[in-house]
Every structure is written in C-alpha cells, then in structure tokens.
Length: 301
Image (tube, rainbow, N blue to C red; front, side, top):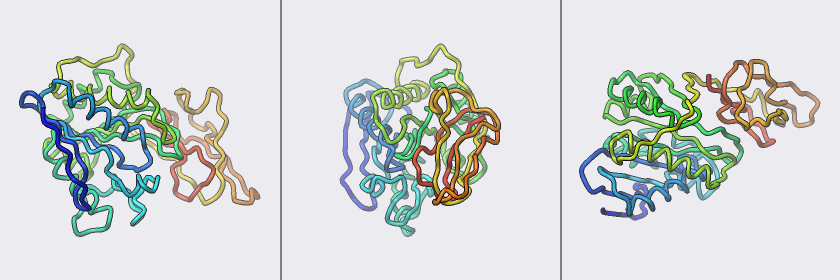
C-alpha cells in the first residue's frame, strides 16, 4: 500500500493516492466541489483513513477539497470570480480562477474508471440523500449504472439521460462513469451523513471489483429519471411552508403542494410557490434571503 500527498500548489490540487495490493480499477473520489458541503469532505478524509490500511485492488485517488477558496470563504462558489467549479469541467489552465482550479482535476478524472463526486446540502439547503447517475449511451457505462441501481444501495437514485458535451458524456468517452452522491443538510457533517457517503464509496468499489464485499439493501430504491427546479421569481424574502410531516421527512410532494411563500422585502407583495409536478424533494432552500434565480426546491420524478 502506498500513500502520497501532493504538495499545495495553485495549479495542483491536494490529492491522496492509495495503491491496492493488486492491479485493478481506479476510483477518483472528490469532495468540496462546493466549498460549504462538509459531509462529503469529512467522508473523503474517512475513506482515505480506512483504505490506507484496508485491502483492495486497483487505485484510489481522493481529493478531499476541490474548491479551497470556497471552503475558506464558507461558500459554494469560488469567491475569487464567483463561479462554481462543478459547472466548468474540464477547466482551463489559462482561464478564470475557477477554470484554473478545475484544470488539474481533469487528468485524474479521465484516467479513472469511475469518478465519485461527494456533495450534500450547502449551508442554506435542506436535502434528502440520493445518488445521481447519468446515462450517456455508452454501453459499458450504462451497464455499470444498471448494476448500481439494481443493488439498491440508496433510498433514492436519480438516473438522467445526458446530452453530448456534458461532464458525464465527456468522461464516458474516456471510459469513466460519473456519479454524484448527495448526503447531508445545511452543511452539517453528522455521523449518519458521513457514513452514508463512505458506504456508497464502498458500494462503488464493490461494483468495480476493487473489494470483495457485496453491498446491497433489502429495500428497493425510488428511481427517478428527471429533475425539475422551482426557481425564485425575484429578490426578496423566502418563507418555507410548514409541511406536516416535515419537508425533509421523505414523503413525496404532490403537484400544486405549497412549497413556500415568496415576498417582497417590505412584505407588501406575497405569492405562494407551488410544486409544478409530483415527485421526490431532493434539495430545497431553507434560509430567508431569496435572490432571483435561486433554486427554491429541486424535485425528482
């Protein structure tokens, strides 16, 4: 087993590389793509700790914090240029601050068999845990997705068909499957949320043949194929609806259910915001400040 930590460098991400006892697949694990999603960061460190002394085949490359400027600023975006690293793959060494930040990640991703990107609810967001997979039309990648879905490793699994040019499609051309894991709300890093991320990483490693354990559950996953965003119509005050059971209780949302109330700053104008569809709440805004274009609720169906 070999452990190396790359030195800090503006053009190079800190990465932990673990080599297994035998040749095999390569799994890239990233976290901190959004700098205020802490359960994934804690889980990335935990995965590194566990597998530094645990038998596996192949190679693990773990980057616990991609967006270091965002992490230091306690924000999802990169405060230097206001951009989101998750939106700019594969980056550009001569581009903006965020493009330069992402560029060193691309070689790791293109060399991997799977990229597991650990996310969660930001400081402002509630979230129901789910895995987010992407069909690309590449037979081998889509077969791997079917294997993960059939293993029922998550309560909710979103399987989208992606278009050419997207991150998942670019990666599939290089033989890499892209998986987004979402666990943890409001930037929290509770034991259950962190352990869920670790368990998902182990399940991905099992599907790649990197470990022998079979990771599965007895409860069938809720599988969704589309996502719909409810967007803030203007700047103002957001008041989340007091649903019963609570909004994060996991119950489905029905078409025309009230999600919350959007008001002007002086509260002279208010309007109820309702769900345009029936489905599963994936994440939602919990804080009061509302900016035009904010995602108030993301619904899988």
